[in-house]
Image (cartoon, rainbow over all chains, first blue to last red):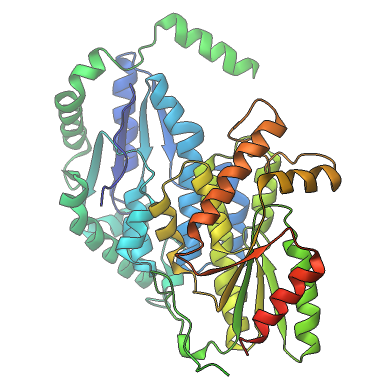
Amino acid sequence: MRLLVPNRHKGKLIVVEGIDGSGKSTQLSLLSQWLRSQRIAVAFSEWNSSPLVRETTKRGKKKDMFTPVTFSLIHATDFADRLERYIVPLLKAGAVVCADRYAYTAFARDVIRGVSRRWVRNLYKFAVRPNLAFYFRVPLEVAIGRILGGRNAIKYYEAGMDVGLSRSVEESFRLFQGRILEEYEAMIEEVGFHVIDATGSIEEQQQQMRDIVSQQLGESLQNGVMRATQGDIDAAKAAARIL
Amino acid sequence: MLPKQPLEFYSESLAGVDRDELQGKLIVIEGPDSVGRSTQVARLRFWLEHQGHAVMDTGLARGALAGKGIQRAKEGNTLGPVTMTLFYATDFADRLENEIIPALRAGFVVLTDRYIFSLMARAIARNEDRSWIEKVAGFALVPHAIYYLRADVRDLLARVVLGRGAFDYWESGMDMRFGADMHDSFVRYQTRVIRALDRMAKRYNFVIVDANKTPDQIFRELRRSIGKLF
């Protein structure tokens, strides 16, 4: 079965994946700054952020209405909305779209929640295949240390409490993230992840990312993707203020 | 009395469902927009209850989880075709797991005004991949009977004109702009939906009912056929 649709647009799609606490969002943010500094038009898309399904997701979580299948489907709906309304039009326009989590997050999490690997992979067949997918590999204990050090409360669904692995939030989080880690590790070849050792320093990881981006997308970043002049940037900012 | 066989899933088993526990009957009424499905569902419900069966009826976008969200999304102007398909699939899964299956466990007759077939036909009419949506919806239970109320697009057109007297944006597939105006888009879109349903008929064992007959004739035909399921 053919996984994900090839990106035939001018723009490029870069995604980051990894368990919570792997540092992927920090790295993606640094990468986008670097791209912007080269006057490349960059756009962002985050997992589970579509306004269209927000109310439904909230209702389902609040009233504990989700099953593995509906949980998976509502996230796919969210993803489809962002893809159709935002990611694809931006790629057509020639932007570099940076996505914090992509379909692979569903491949990992939804399987642990109880849907089959085959079913969830088919579910996301409409997605555009990323030009680059980075996977931030980190040992479970390191990630947990970062999460527990950074904030006090782990959310119910983040901890996978609905999966029923443990009654303790912290223990459930540990078990849940551990299983997600296994799913990610098992899909590296299948989906073609570029693996980044996320135990290295932030600077080292960022350098690796930039090297891979230059090497793989260098040509199209020079000519192909949308580049903004200072005039474009100023005009866009002024227009956004008016809106 | 037919030998009792457990209901089956199409291609994907739902976790936590013991098929042997599903004692009720699952009956589907399918067909395009404004073909007269809901009239028949209401009459069948009355008749079945009169016969002593407990009846639960359900239909697209009526679920507690996603029903409201779908309504709201359709009032806006940014609902893409794949997003719509998946939103409806979410609603269907919610109703299947939280309404239909519990009712079947309790021995109810479940009458459903449309099932996965309309959802798939709409997706296919919007150029989405047939095998993709079939697999997405593969966790559906195979019903005891599927009645397809079949009409041609010109019959549907007459019902719209004589009934509501106005075209509906979504029933006309205006999100895809199949034609220059509501009428042209309606004709092209509904033709595609009907074609998609027709192509499913054999594969999914639809019982085809001619929707051009009078409501009384259709009701009698359905009643006769459903009577044999018990």
